[in-house]
Amino acid sequence: QKACKCTAYSRRAMLRASLLLLSARSAYAQPMAGDKCTFDATAGEPFEFGATFDVSASNKQTWVAQAVILKQYNEALNDDGEVIGWQENVVYADPEMKIVFYPTSGTAEEPFEAVHDCGAGVIEQDRETCQDVAEGSTITIPPTTGAGATQPLCYNIKFATTKLTSVFHLVTTNVDSVAIFAEHDPTEFERGGIGGIHYLMDVDTSAMGDDAALVALGAATPIEPVFQDGVDNAPEKEKPWGLAIGTSFLVNACTLIGVIFLAPAIKKVADKNPTTIFALANAFAAGALLAAAFYLMLYEATHLITDPVDTAKSETDADGEKTWSVESKEAGRS
Picture 1 (cartoon, one colour):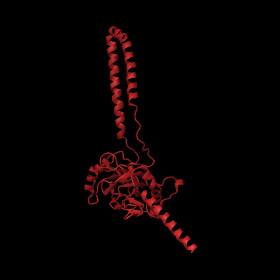
Picture 2 (cartoon, helix red, strand yellow; picture 1 turned 180 degrees about the vertical axis):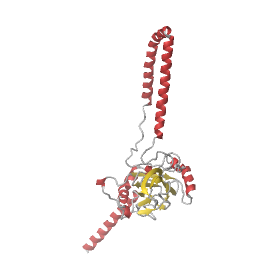
Picture 3 (cartoon, helix red, strand yellow; picture 1 turned 45 degrees about the vertical axis):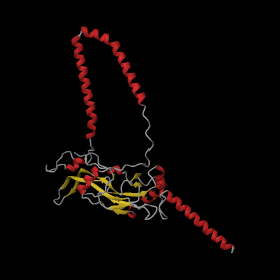
Picture 4 (cartoon, helix red, strand yellow; picture 1 turned 90 degrees about the vertical axis):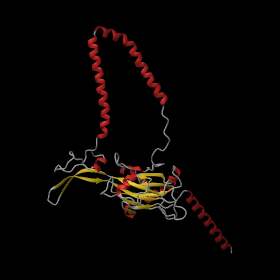
């Protein structure tokens, strides 16, 4: 009888401990048993990008990756035995990327840290064990607590190497905030300039064609990260405007005092040698204008400098026919 009482007490204690563990896990939006909440920290973080996002505005979003068109020299031989030479290629920063979408209880640092180890453990697995996702496919992000809760998966999204823009449709029903762990920084797949699109947009393009999707993405609202791992998220320090303005006035006052003291002496010299002073003044004025114009244009010209590696010197191919397309100009290779 004593043994039976001890057994009953042990069962009640184990049940109470299990309930406490489940309630603690639910409070931090952690998934159920079987999740991968450990990772090899000795090799550093197994992801380059980790951040929280507020997706409460809608139930569907679009993940975007963009490529650029590079004119590259191909030394391979064609069917006629001739070198292929210069050709335009669609080039992504990487042809594929591992990514994990982990629902959280909020977008601050604490909810992110609560799922950090689990997200790192999931994305750390080998690429072969992740679920391949082709361009244009849909990824459903279910909640990790409550009805329909499931373990977040590791996805290996594959970009369309024949398209400048690859899209992946996200479904976030019953999920208000999510932590995203990515193998690469998604800004590596953003194309600046004309046609550039943010990597996460608050718009559903699943029922649209390619052209309509690009128009919708260009007009949609980007979803920016709220908390980003490894980035200083502290408020920006107030700038010392008063000190800067006061110092500027002090320097100007010192300059003005020098002009006041030198003006009488300069006037005497100018009265005696008006032609010489006039010529020197014009020369100094012209030099100042030319120098100002040169340095202002020099800085602006740096924006037009591109990486010359694998870039053709001419805008036409060897036959003088093939020119840069509109898309390549949008990619910053005009």
